[in-house]
Amino acid sequence: MESGALDFALSCFVADGDRIAFVPTMGALHDGHLALVAQGKELADRVVVSIFVNPLQFNDASDLERYPREKESDLAKLEAAGCDLVWLPSASDLYPEGFATSVRVAGVSERWEGEHRPGHFEGVATVVAKLFNEVVPNVALFGEKDFQQLAVIRRMAIDLGLCDNIVGVPTVRETDGLALSSRNAYLSLDERQQALALPRALEAARAAILSGNAIDDALGEGRNSLLEGGFSRVDYFAAVDAETLEPLDRLRAGMRLIAAAVIGSTRLIDNVAV
Ligand code: PAF
Image 1 (cartoon, protein in one colour):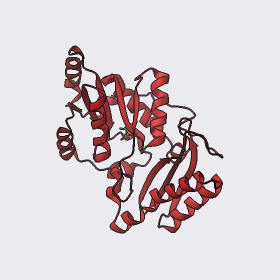
Image 2: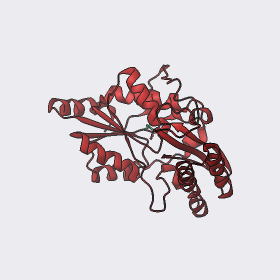
Image 3: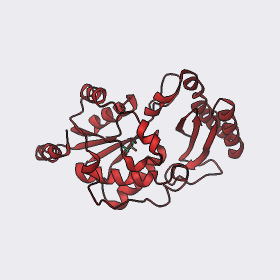
């Protein structure tokens, strides 16, 4: 559905007293996205999905250009999943001529992805604020795979009073442990195999920390195993507080291990709860 018809469809849902679950996406949908739709169906009467490849959140023009666009198969998957409404805004719907506002979430957005992808979270927060303003959801669902993004959106939604029910849905993994990601499509067969070093390194670090090893040692071990496993660069491999994303140097409730690393021309991120 294009933006013109969105307001009418949403007003029908509201007139019927339906609660709306919202799943914002950039398309190239996989089972991780469909898990968000399934969870949305549990939590509300109607599920609305948006598909928009948001130029504001790409700090690299070639990354934006090669991002997969699979409209027809996305629509078929959403229909099969029982999604009630798919919104396909255009760039000019969201960012009309003269658009000059940016949403910046201080603190939680600054480290990790924020450091390695300057402007990324401003782009995410800006588009999600715009989308929330249009859809006015009762509940919105995001994957835990983008763990820092989830924390940034939670903070923004509270601060701007946009949606008081942000739900994080656990990462969906392949049977061998690789987290589903639209970017996995870039991996060659060899890289796909080597990429398993990422979930394995996170699991090993988690086990090491839980069995009493020093956090720094466990993280250093994790970084090394990624480089030995075929990754060419590790942007970060860190233990953080799940809410603030501040680094932790001792085991605490709510600790999360987060990592980002590059294999071939693909940058992958993943995380696990400790
Ligand atoms: O996670 C994504 O797919 C995007 O960052 C989001 C939340 C749809 C904003 O463009």
